[in-house]
Image 1 (tube, rainbow, N blue to C red):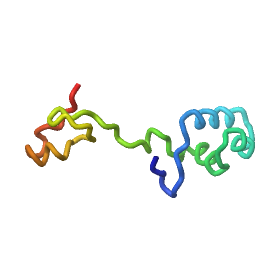
Image 2: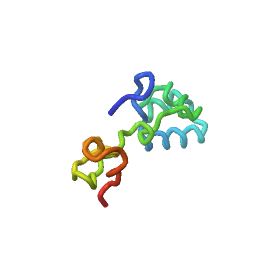
Image 3: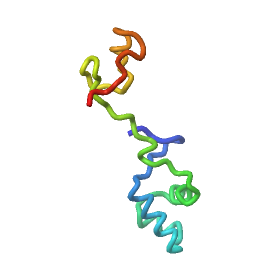
Image 4: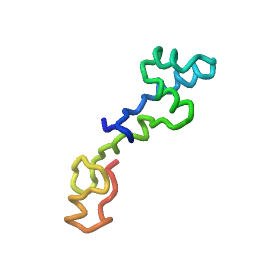
Amino acid sequence: MERASGGRRPVDDARVAAVLRLLGEGRPKTRIAEHVGISVGSVKRIAKGQHVSQAEDAEPRLVRCGGCGGMVKLPCIACELRDGPGVTDQAET
């Protein structure tokens, strides 16, 4: 998985939810970090709403191209080279 800005790995959604719940209970940030298994800095970023979630950092998923049948990130570059831009940019359903 690629790292977020600054070389940080994104915190998974379950841990973010746990941090927010524990912050809401008034627990100290250092104890939350120890309990959840992340750094105090990550807890502080989550508290400020500055964390990078896995969903935001995720790679675009591959889909089957309706033009060539390949598993690609749309638009399919192979089809664009063959047919021209925008001709076959629909995924097969």
